[in-house]
Length: 179
Image 1 (cartoon, rainbow, N blue to C red):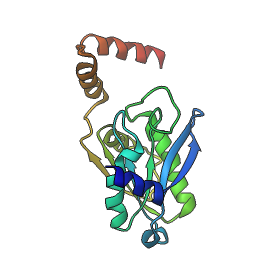
Image 2 (tube, helix red, strand yellow; image 1 turned 90 degrees about the horizontal axis):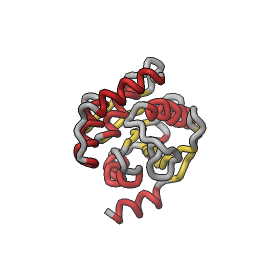
Image 3 (cartoon, rainbow, N blue to C red; image 1 turned 180 degrees about the vertical axis):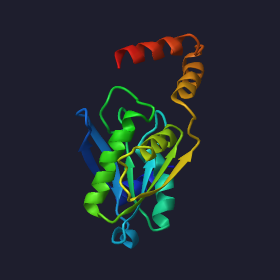
Image 4 (cartoon, rainbow, N blue to C red; image 1 turned 60 degrees about the vertical axis):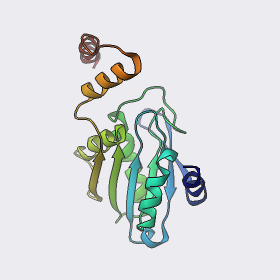
């Protein structure tokens, strides 16, 4: 609701990083006095077509539990630059940079990842990175999807009323040729 968004504005500061491919990315940083010194952080990831501020109620809950919070706007969402939504794949590399930002604040931080829907997929993709810092101690994926193919298929049906076959199969072949 609006009261959570007002709370977010009053409690957070805006921080920015540059992605590997040159995008200016935005996040809200909420430093909680009780955890800032001991470094308990939660990173919260929003869903498809959402934005970080829409997760303010989740932030409030974690903040009340004593966590400091970093809430990124995914590329092409909210206050972050970008023209293409990566459904959680390029975002995993952005998240490694966000994790570095937390570690600059506290190198002994204990970081939890929490995401919903596309944010859940982002969490799983981030957690699967082989160079994930050891300070990331937990990942919670809420209502994510089992594969990108499944996600694109459901989006095509709900948004455009298009069948996933053969369009996704053709797109997949083209993507493999290009990469």
